[in-house]
Image (cartoon, rainbow, N blue to C red; front, side, top):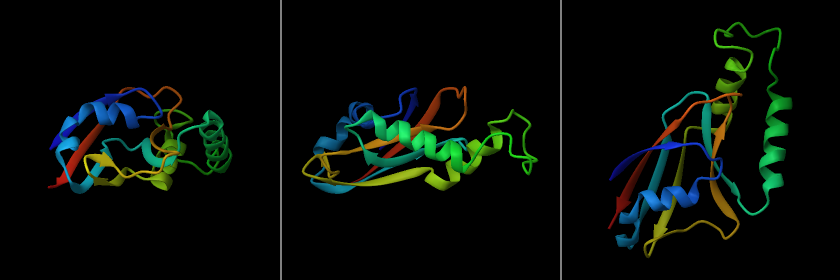
Length: 132
C-alpha cells in the first residue's frame, strides 16, 4: 500500500496513522515512510516535549549554518545548501515495525518531518506497508 500525502506539521505520526487505516489489519510487518524531497528529512525521536524540536533546530542551525563562505550551491538562497546537508544527515526515510495492527514505537517516540528550508513548501511522503 502506498499513500502520497502533503505535510505542513513537524510531528506527523498521528497524520500518518490517519492516512493508513490498513495498518490495523496487519498482525506483523513494517511501515516504510519516505520523503520525496532533498531539503527536508524524517527522523524518529521524542514526541512529548516541544523543547526537543527546538533544541534539534538550534543544534542543526549551529552545526550547518547559513551563509558559510565555502558553499557554492546557493541558487535558491542562503538556506539552500544547509537544507540539503541537514537532509542528508537525518535521512529521507524511517522504517517502523508493526505488531497487532499498531506501530511498535516507544511511548515517547514520534515521527518528525524536519523542514530545513526557511520557507519550505508542501512536502510529500510515500508510505508503504509490508506484512500480513
